[in-house]
Image (cartoon, rainbow, N blue to C red; front, side, top):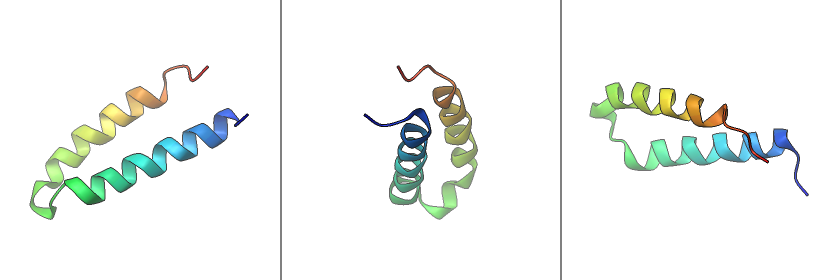
Length: 47
């Protein structure tokens, strides 16, 4: 079983990878929106 810290790290790595893959450099303003959504998701209970 993975720990909460490991789950958080996996989530952060996944979001980072998706950002790099799907958001072109000219859309950096949208990255801020995605970061806010990621922060909301990170606060959800993982159990």
